[in-house]
Every structure is written in structure tokens, then in C-alpha cells.
Image (cartoon, rainbow, N blue to C red; front, top):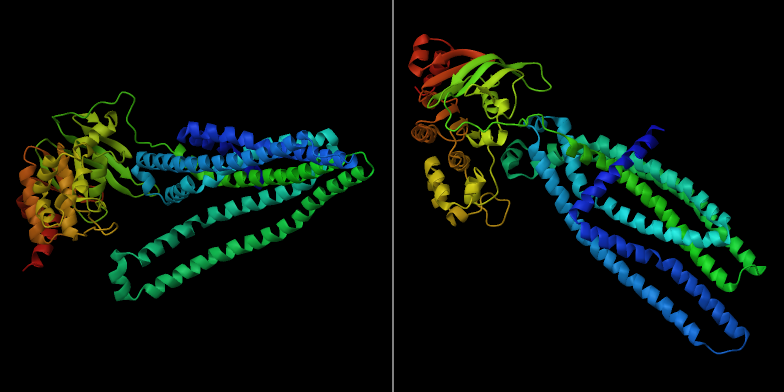
Length: 599
């Protein structure tokens, strides 16, 4: 009962999906339905004309007459109906293809836009990733459901017309057909639900298979795969997991085959029971030969259409279950949003940022990454954050950009809680480059331009940003300069070294012309000299701006006016480089350990 209740509840997914379909192309949907109505009425009309032709021929033969004009009109009418059915069918196919393209485009854009609107927290949740993966698949793989709904509409109109004709002769014939088909429908529906449940359980395993497939064929992993001899390890793991899925799918398919074969016997018996009734009544002359032709054709079409309706309904119910994740995904709402009457970010910033007794715990954990943290970043000030991994350095950056809200306490900008500001406007005033920055498989120009898309076609600003980050030296060596495709994904693309990619990423931050610039270990792939040059340039370019950077190299950290040492979620030490070294605390210890490696 639970399975059937789930299937019936899943049908509530159909109306919102139909709305998505309608929004993707109202005129295409309307015209498709119009031609489906026309083609639906052709089978019963053609069967009626065929019966009239047989009766006309029988009358002519019985009276030794010759073909009459009325007979040829009937033949021409049947020819016209068949031709119209063929033409209308092709028109429907045309509109189905157009609708498929429009629907795929529309729903893919919806998924992309909605995914980008969700909180960063969602991307760090495995359950969310499972749902997102299913939503992405369902966004394009549920075209079959759209076409099934169109077929169901057409089959229903056709069946209604055929049923009306059968009812005219005998209601029992229709009841016999329907009654024998219901068990087959219930069986198909049951196995469709089992298939959905199986796919749902297999999602995490399928994600792991995708990951193994990607790792096994990626250029990033190629070196280690060869050096560590991991090819066999990965392929054996992939084989084991894929065999599990294959065995589960085959087991369900076998059970479905046996059940479907047994149930098909009952549905076929129903049709032939009605067929015998028609033959008997024709023999005893309750029906004419024309009636025989009409009824046998109509019964055959009705049996086929009723069976198709049940099958289509089962298919729709099946796919509606799969669409649950897509619709649940689209219903997910971000928690970090701008308030109703959001304030614009201050320009210029007068007082700066203040962390006031800030506590932060990542969702799904209990550890306090920040534990009552207090500090200020004032206009024109440059601060360096240091500490062991996991001490909250990057978390501070995420809170400043309001990618997260604090678990406790407040983050203030010019004395006002960040939650009072418009998020988009706030982000425009902050330029951040993280250690795991994106490498866009686009042109060099676009790689920089995405830092502020309104400047994407402003060549002067793009070049100035590249000069500031020292990326101009990299770009000038490329065959097509700023028009050069970067990365190996597309034809003609050129890959860069880690350090070169980082200079491109830094240019994005400079393009923003933000009041606050944050570098979260973006130069990790650079050698010590190259990193020193980048941070020296960073110091020059951030004069009068608020700047915050995170680095493990003390040669660059010492450039900051104030250094904050984080430990256990609080500030353990702070001050200038010279002051902290003289203090002889944790900073001095870390500095001495790193300095000794160069002696």
C-alpha cells in the first residue's frame, strides 16, 4: 500500500511539470494539442467509413450492380482520412521535437539559475549533491514524460471516440476489454515503482562510479595513476560497483518479464472474448458484415488504445516519481538572502568590518571553528591571517563576503550587521581569490572578464587588470593573446602552469575595483620569489583600500601592517611582524621553523 500511495502522491508532480512545459513554449504546446485532437478522431472515422464501404460492396454484389459514385466517394473519404492521419502525425512529431528542444533549454536554465542562488552550505552537503545530481539528470532525461503526456491526451480522445461506438452496440464489450487490462496496468505500475526505488538507492553508488570514471581518465590524475600503478585498483573498484548495479537491475528486469508475460495472457483473452461475441452476432445476423468490419477494427483499436493508456499512465507515474527530486530541488530556498528593504553597501566604507563575539559551526559538525572571535579591519588597513589548517582563516573570509552567516555574534560593516545589506551589492565591493579558484575553459579575456561581467568587453579595463596581476606577461606569450582559449577541453585550447593560472585569477579580483581585496592563499603554486613579487604588487595596489590576505610564507606575511594568529577559533596573538617575533610566542616559533629551512 505504501508503494501505491507513493505513486499516487507522485502524480502531484505532473501539474508543476506541465507548467514548466507550457512556459517553455506556449504556442508549440497549443498547436501540438490541436493536431493531436484531429489525429485522434481519424481511427473511428476510418473504421466507420470502412464498414460503410463493405456494406455498399455487399449490396452491389447481391443485386449484381455496378460500382456507384457513392462508393467511390467513400473510398476517397477513407483515402483522405488516412493521408490526413499521416500528415498530422508528422506535424505532431515536428512539434514534439521543437518542444523537446525548448523544454530542455528552459529547464536546464532553471536548474543552473536555481543552483547558483542556493547557499554555499548546500554545496558542502552530500545529500544536496545527490539531489542536485538527480535534478540535473531529470531536467533533461524526463523528455519521455512530456511526450507521454501528449500521447496520453491523444490516446484518451481516440479511446473516448472508439468507446462511444462500442457502447452503441454493447456496454459489456467495453467492460470486458477494460476489466482484462486493469491487472496488467497494476503489474506495470508496481514494477515501475520498484524501478524508481532502486534508482534512488543507487544514486550514491552512481556518483562514485562517475567520480572513478573521471579520475581514471583525467589529465590531473594521470601522473599519479602511472607512478602509483592505480589503473588496476580503480578499474577493479569500478567493476565491483558497476557489477552490483548490473545485478540489481537484471534481477528486477527478470521479475518484470515473468509478471508481464503472465498478465499479457489475460488482456489478450479479453480482446478475443469480445471478438467471439461479434462473430457470433454476425453469424446469427444481428450484425451486418459492415458492422463486423467496423466493430472488429474498433475493438482492436480500442484494446490497443486502452492498453496504451494504462501503459502511458504507468510510464507517467514512473517518471513523476523521478521528477520528485527535480521539483524538490527547485523548491529549495536559500537561507542567506537580502532583507525586504536591504541597504546598499557603503561607498566609501568609513569604519570597516568588525567581528563582534563571532561563533561559527559548520552544518553537520559540532566543532566551533570560530569561538567568540573579536577583531576589526579598518579602511586602508592590511591584515594577514595565519594559523594551522582548520583554525578558521577561510571561514572569516566567507563570513565577510556573507557566503555564510555566523552561528553566533555579529559581523558588522560600518556598524551595521551584514544581514541588513543587499547581498549582491555587498559582494560587488569585495574582491576575493581563494586557493581553489576556478580555471574557466574560456578565452583569456573571458577568464579575467568574469570577475566583473559588465566589463567583459572593455578591453582597456581587462588589460589594466592583467597588468596589475602580472598576467599580462603570461597572455602576451599566448598565440592569440587575449583571444586565446585556455584549458584543453576545447579545440585549440592552451593549458597554463599553476602559477600562470593564479595570475589570471588574480586579475579577476583586480578587475572588480572593489573596496576590499582578499587573497586566500591564491599563490600557493608560485615559487617564493614569484609570490613575493605578487604580494609586493598587491601592497602597492591596495594603498588606501582594505586588504586581507592569508599565506603560509612569512616572507609575504611580514608585509602586512597587522598580523593575526588564529588558534582554536580565537585570536592567539596579533601585531606587526617585528613585535610578534620579539614577543617570542607561537608566531615567533612558526617563523623560526620556516626560516631555519632556508639556512
